[in-house]
Image 1 (cartoon, rainbow, N blue to C red):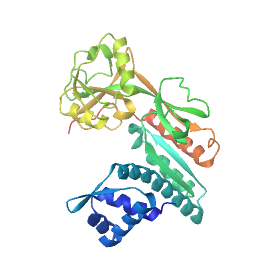
Image 2 (image 1 turned 120 degrees about the vertical axis):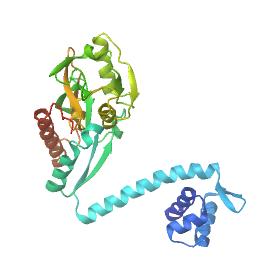
Image 3 (image 1 turned 60 degrees about the vertical axis):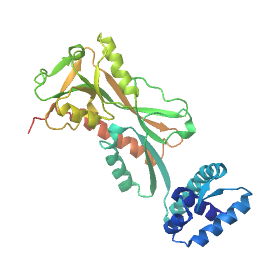
Image 4 (image 1 turned 45 degrees about the vertical axis):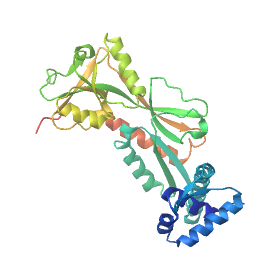
Length: 307
């Protein structure tokens, strides 16, 4: 059986690039680190390092073992967390996945309530834009965007939270900033700023609506996310179209206008694993998500004027 401590020392050497650096990082002497490496090579029967000048270079076998060691050490860390939970009287865990634009808007409320009402529950949070194909890889609760009538698959229940219409974000002085609404086709000749580097479902949904309006937008600038796209809008470079939730906090000098004929729309759901559906943690998470979604429906400012 492999010695876990030796694996940890071995990983430090591979990650640090030398015995000396690993020794400094671990608080060991270089000779102690070398002894661990020698013992590990003896245990495995593998040549893990080759001499290069006065240093060592990991072999192909070392890189393969390092990858497997990462998985082993990660599982060990999970087991240690479980032991700590049991010692402290924690009563369980809940994993929650969410997409970017609800991260800052909704998740702090969810975590604060869970920490307050159920302090014995360990939370695992993850930013995730897509639903994994494998049910085993899914979180207990995942906030997702999808079409109306979305089906989450067997073993999961989808709770509808919000229908989120897309809006146009316009720079100050744009010809449409004084209007309450604008037809999507009226923006066809504008310089567009792309805001979805991942080319995800939200972008595909927007492009489908543009096609329905009879045009394909000409993207002048590619931004990686909504805040960056809005910064380009503020600079007067062009317009961007994004879900209203992503435009909840507009920078100064950017106006928001409703889109009509058609109005692109995304639906937001909380997808809950049936195995945790009736646990206090999952019920509380869904309850808070419903509350913040209801608040989002009732609080959508039209614009922020320039300073």
